[in-house]
Image (cartoon, rainbow, N blue to C red; front, side, top):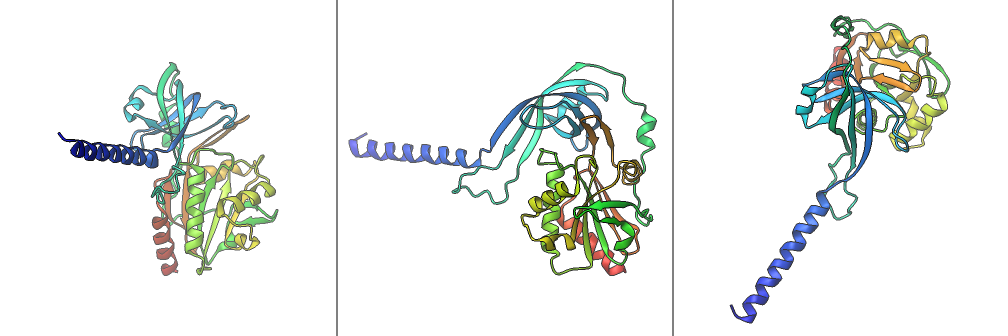
Length: 302
């Protein structure tokens, strides 16, 4: 091989190495890992997740219970309700590299290296069977709340409009859960800017913490605006502690306040202009397009 040929080969190798390095850098999200301990509440093998009553992670999140993705999914086979576990909580953010094409990237989180540290008797199977599931055509009770402006509101006042309802935990730090629901609602809010016949309502199940001021600040944050007009079409509200159990029961929402802990799942409903359930979604198994289609269909039926 002559000097000119060797030089060309060397240049090609260097360029290839730089390209691979650049590609790897642009696609690798930044990840933070936290030691995690908690107790298994329930398992969803189809969603490859489990609701876990987690202990506080100093410097990151308060003690709370919520759904967690489990990696690898095969780890779920070793878990049973009531088990105490240890794991690594992994939270990633999209690569901040301005040259990376990551417009569609989204944050992610999961538990890995899950180990059972103690076994406990599972809860009675009858408890799960007793859970009420909102059904299409079912009338929604006239539940009352206090909104972000300190005003008392009730579901009855939205008669004649399509009402989109989801439940939030303002202190939730995991992007796949409450923040994802609020981000989806923010997108729906933007897409329905010219449709006053659809109203959005995000309901907190943490009334002791989520005062009107907290809800107002949270609303501005997730909607990325400080315009008070936001709340004419998207409200944030909390029920009284006394009303929370019956609201949670109707919407199949698991809420168990225990000191600093809140065990919860996710619940989203589409309520028609007649005050009846059009569609109900368990967990995070819905897209913005799903609720947009549901809202359109409910409006046409009116």
